[in-house]
Length: 171
Image (cartoon, rainbow, N blue to C red; front, top):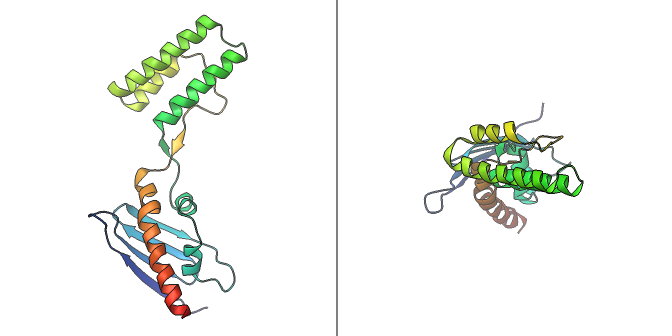
């Protein structure tokens, strides 16, 4: 069994947000305890590559897709997708002009309902009335905002810290 070595890094907050404590080990284990949430992943490292080198060379969006799931309904993108579906169906002749106009009114009603009811209730109400067909469902998803902020803010500052450490070790 190989000797395990763990490394601890701290990233302070900026304006009271974005702090993080990171634990890394030579096998590629990445753990972050932050005010944006707790995240962990095991990264498969190339031979002779350190976890620090790997993290420095990794884009924030690559980290995001490893630590979080796209499981938050993106309201704006969902409405856009529904409208695109209606326009596509109209161009394909599946809706008459009058039917398309009625569907457009339902979409406008949905947008109003989203301000008054929960997302689930508003979308169910619209779905029960619409004639637009979606083969793959109509919801569009995004990453949780806390995970996005972690990867774009706290993780990027960890990378800066690791770069400095790697540069000083190389001198």
